[in-house]
Length: 185
Image (tube, rainbow, N blue to C red; front, side):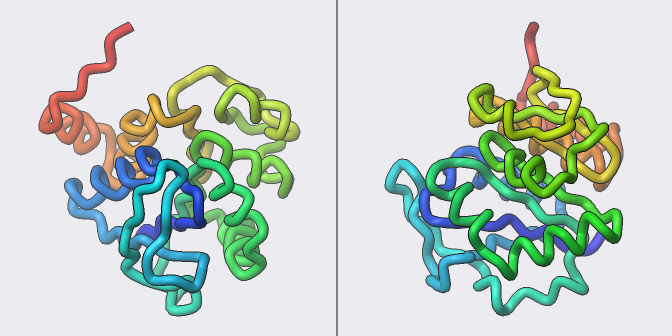
């Protein structure tokens, strides 16, 4: 597996973005934090500023295997308004490459018609934006090349779903055990 890029706009949800980065890096997956703001550091929705690995204009998308879009406001709106990023999201979708989004960010995929006929989840108040999807209440939902997550409280499930897609169920289970994650019902 090549590279995963997690995209950050001003006002991203810190837990959703950073949990995914942390879990993927623990799993040994090459994961880059990418700013869509043109700035090397991006402030989250709760005032936590993080230094990025790359600016969007420096990403070689030919080497990227997966795009991850965290939620948060106004971060989700900033991601959706970023034309060059949306061009890549469309290209990934057309190529059948992996696209992941959590919380409010699955709305981006719904607006672009990418969820028609697929199972998907999002933050409850954004479910109406999952145009054409079979909306589930799962913490994380995988359907083909698209993985969606419900929100901050589901960030570990979402991250582990990504690890499972890239490395298999056993690797995801081993990582969950390593971080002492038990999903109780």
